[in-house]
Length: 318
Image 1 (cartoon, rainbow, N blue to C red):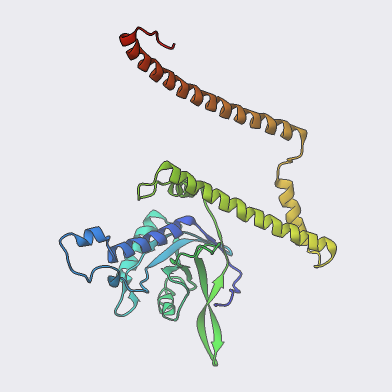
Image 2: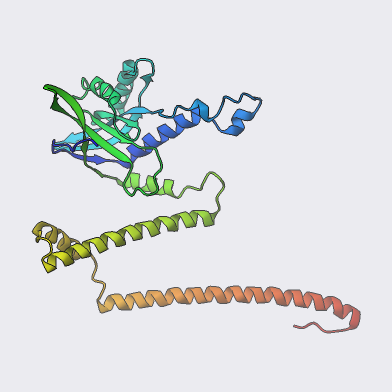
């Protein structure tokens, strides 16, 4: 595992960068392994399929953004071309893309590059060094495309490069840098729209609702675990099992002050009123549904007896 960074920089990563990297990886994977239906049409060659995809194939690109003081904010990204024979970047393509982005985003600069994989390896350092003539201290954003349902954190790692003396020779190595997710209003709307898109397999509205409720349940479950952990920590601090941390206590007090007062009489009154309104709407919906069903039964009953009355002289039920 790479050591932690000591630069003191604060990194802010926007969701657009993660969406771009994920989209880049998915497109390349689909191009290398087209769907079976498209491959099977007029082609009986058994070599097409998963065998065409290298097990360790990766995608590469540049990340752009701005730096203000000690804060580095990564806003966007674009793709790069890599020569597979020499493992070098296409400099002419990079310079052309850089020129185009400078015209559209004059305040954004190339901050580093991105790739996909489980962890940084030695071959990544050659690409990292190739970008040092553009940015003397580039950042490396690595996204792990492997699906891990047990993982709670984002599969994104940001690396910096630092010179460490190894065997008496100073050499650059990758070090982990902490980051935070930063969003603007347009990104929040876009991410919410993507999250509510209808599945490509023709899933019904019930499927979408189940996925939405599953996400809410996971968020509430994680919030509950964090609150329980904080409660246990404060309880141990009160008992004297662990030393008192005044900085943490101030943060907890600030968090509690920002929460609405949920024990007031006004809150109980409004809550009960809204709760009763919801129950009333549910009851009305059930009554309306039952009335509609009963009306259908009566119509069918009258229709059946109307036919019989023409034969035997009976009167309709209603």
